[in-house]
Length: 305
Length: 281
Picture 1 (cartoon, one colour):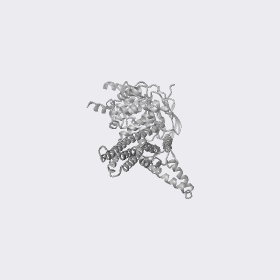
Picture 2: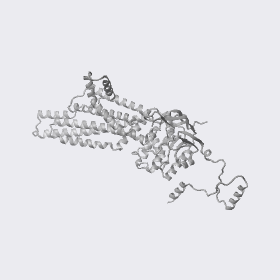
Picture 3: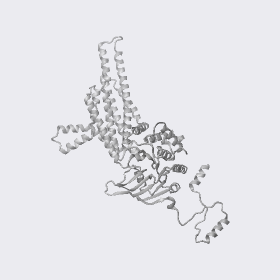
Picture 4: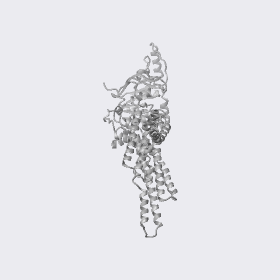
């Protein structure tokens, strides 16, 4: 019982912003989600990838690669979004319900750091999950590419390598791995990160996890259909009332056009993404992540625990 | 004169009721001071405002009016929490962390790191008797073990003030005794303790001073001995007194205006009896 020294005034000077504290909360959040076994969904992704590659054997090589990329990027987008929403929605309510939040905020931890740590933990999780899915995707794509080349050379006469066959092999190589896969995956990440930030904002004032998830899903859908409404207004301003125009403009401002991040079709088709479009879309994503987080912080700052 | 560990001045807290104009007053014009080294018991029935007062002291809830300070620093400021350790009622820490990981996590939040943090965690695990359970996840801890790891996390940054909300709620008598001994040990070391408890017997054993809250108002406050002693009565406990001696004392008393109200053998407490019986098995 002699382990404790006598009570003395605190010798440490409080830091108003500490990366160490944020890092502790972020790594703990990542650990929480990992130990909740959220990565099991990657097995489902693997199943989708492997099974879809088997079902494509009857198609031409070009069509096989296109569909494979389409399925993989689509699945990556949905899985990362689901992971973002489901894991973020439960973080705050669980800490409040279990009173763990009290023990953390009773330490010299500002609410800003707590919330930022939580968000960074989820962003780390999304990064790890998307990296794993990308590796799996690349492995399946590479295996498919090699089997396509092997099949092509098997049908050729031994020792003969015609110019036509070289062109076909080159065609296969260029159709499988293209540089625009990278911005495509970055956009999937940004979209999921944006949804995580939005879900965190919702959870600062929502009364339950289910409510947070439902509203987040509804906003995700609105984010995908709002460009249609926007186009409609732009082309039919005479038919819409001013109130309707203001209302839809406000929605467009509050919820970004999530279809801007869906470049799967372009990537699968091999269309190059321009640098301007990339910077513009990535910038929009980053701004919305920061804005949602800051609004969430102000709500959380005023929240009576 | 030293700075009070806790200073509460004219504290009032009102909550708004959703969809209603009226407001509920949880704490009304509360003023009290806890001096360094004291064990202060805040008592009151459910809904009397104890938890709200504690939350305001810890800066978790802002006051409607009034001010609270911890060692002279406003509770609203984050840095005031450098000197405070808090154990909430029925805490559920992160179940996926082991005992040692839990202390590392809370230590990092207080700016500890490296060898100092590891040594401190081991020290605290030894102090609360959880060395053997250090590598077990909290999901497998009993209620008493959770309270003890809770006390350890509250002590991680060596605070001068501990705020404990029902620290022995739901814990068996042996565990409850251990926690009480720990609090007494903190007291010996000069650590100030603000304790909220429904277990009045326990409060009586360890607190120097108490305050009784009722409907948000502090209705009694003072040194425990002053509040509960009966001024016109005296208690003498004798050991090995013969019947002759008792007779003489009775005769002596009969010559004075004083009268004997009760004469009986003192009882041990049920807790002590229970611990003696279960400890000998």
